[in-house]
Image: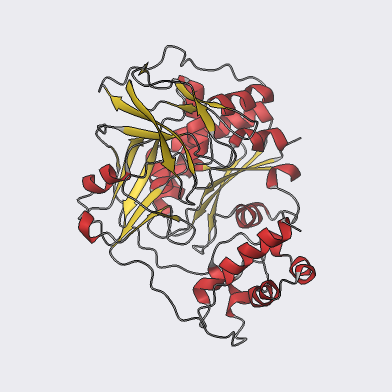
Length: 426
């Protein structure tokens, strides 16, 4: 099977040998009402109200949302506003923890016997994609008529990140437990777990855990970015090509991050919704890279201080990896559900002098979707909608490979994303 294109990033994973450590409870959590693709929730609590761990504090107002839950027990101090990375603001519930972590009495293991039970559980639990996407898990399950293959994403191809790796090493039974649950409920016979070949310990841990399981295969993958993108992952683990106008689940392939799969298992066992996650803290402004289990809503500054970060040296903070992550404007930002990493840098990305395209073809050879980024760039500058359509701009995954390799420093990925917006508005 022909492998799709990509690039090799410097694999600086200082945290890959660091075990997951629970961060001490913060003095305050700030929980935004939007932490997923879709619409914001509305707060259901008021200042001075006592809340429990797992209590719903944000109610969905549309079908494009899941509930938000308290990650700590304590007292609501204020309902404030939270600034998203794109500058938009959403309501935010601020809670002062009491240190007791009292679980809400309604947190009981759900009964999951059929597909609709699974969809309802995924929604009620507030489950979103934990690999950084923030997509709504219940929507994936709802779109699927019949699932023939479950693909679990353990590729984690971004530099610095190690949260999924540590989950595979420390909690392989939870990942396999989630896979078994999905197999049983959705009647899936074939499960593929994609892991990059430069992580032999993770491959071995999952293989050992799956030894007595039926239909589960661990698939070593080349350590190439963006190996974890869903269309790339599906092709490299199953050989199935996802059509341009389809999502994998619409053609019978369910793709979940390994940490998301582990959470579904945890929820089935405990009934405690998504109120905490593992976050890798790294970057050249971080002396002690680490992997921390933190309550949702914990201020980013608490994680950086735990990692002995000298805050006055930090010039830029990235949520997620350096390639596809987003820049955080302030230390007051909170850990959100999809956030798998915090990268603190001493020096921001340098402004690069943009030159003319030299027709070298590097962008085309790097593109995993076999697009022609230079031509898409030119079509966008000409606002040529027909050409953008003919060149299949819609399947660009915004991995940034083209921009990364361009010797003329052209903002290819940025222009293609704007081209997609242009297409959606015509």
